[in-house]
Image 1 (tube, rainbow, N blue to C red):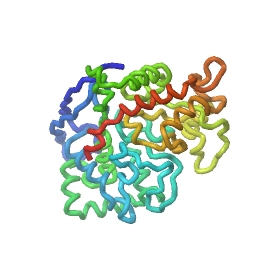
Image 2 (spheres, one colour):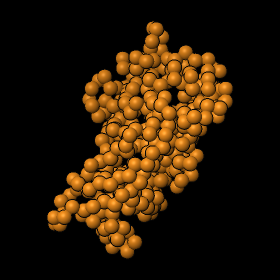
Image 3 (tube, rainbow, N blue to C red):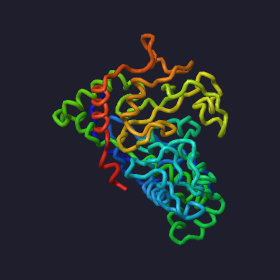
Image 4 (cartoon, rainbow, N blue to C red):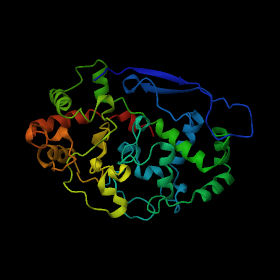
Amino acid sequence: MPKLHKQYISIALFLLGMIVSACDDTEFVPEYAIEVPENLGDFLPQNERNLITEKGVLLGEKIFFDQRFSSNGKVSCASCHKPEKAFTDGVALSNLGVSGKALHRNSPTLANIAWADGLFWDGGALNLESLSFGPLTHVDEMNNDLDSLVGWLSDDPDYYPLFMEAFPNLGVSSASISRALAQFQRSLISANSKYDQYARADKNIFSSAEKRGLQLFTQHCSSCHQSDHFTDYSYHNNGLDSVFTDTSFEEVFKGRYRITRDPEDLGKYKTPTLRNIALTAPYMHDGRFPTLESVLLHYAEGVQKSETLSPLLKEGGKVGIKLSHQEQSDIIEFLHTLTDKEFINKY
């Protein structure tokens, strides 16, 4: 895995591709310095129609934590994406929305989401701008109406000037709400864990168990949890189930097939990043595993056969990954080194 170095990338860009305004002059975006670890890539991925600005990020952060964006004034984006839990919620199937009803998917972390090219567990959203509309309006999440939100924000003496400063060509609109939230989420960069300190130069920081765990992880886990992102941002069937015939709830139990309609995608779900994994229990798309121990036990003893099971889990005529209890324990020791305390304590 590559060494980690910090670099500051100054983003000095023109605001292009936005909705055309009556003004012919191109709006200049002030420079905004974002700390991007070199091992995560040479630049921070952006949407060319929604280039990051400091005012956009700050507005998005304000919206993210504001419960008034829900119909009952009690639920914010942070209700299901809590900073102290690496922007997850600690619930198998979140019931923290307006209705109190459990959803059908586990709340994923938002750490380093800027690099993801498919969102939700099945890749059903292509970018962060489109993602926000679902939670804002879903009856069991924030249950709000976009027109009502725009009306309230347009009359709010606090929010209105912030929108006009961040998005002078859009003003207060559903588009500017989603773009502000997207900018904030792209700023959520996590890469200062114990592992990162080890990768930089401090090879003495790891215990013997952590070093053994890293070696085992590289051997058995890094094909899907690649590089210092600890994900390949792709979709795999990791043997959670053997049949995929449940068509309820818009076929959410069929995995990526729900989006692609390709039978080869039955049971496949997005590979989650393992950064801050010790904080994001319970695990998998449905939160079925309460601990890291239960996750490792699944791979060692519980993988289910199916036609679309990942080839990586059926090598040598056997399914799963052969791991002793000690090896499982060592991998878990390593996974704990991926916790970034600076990241979770920032907000």
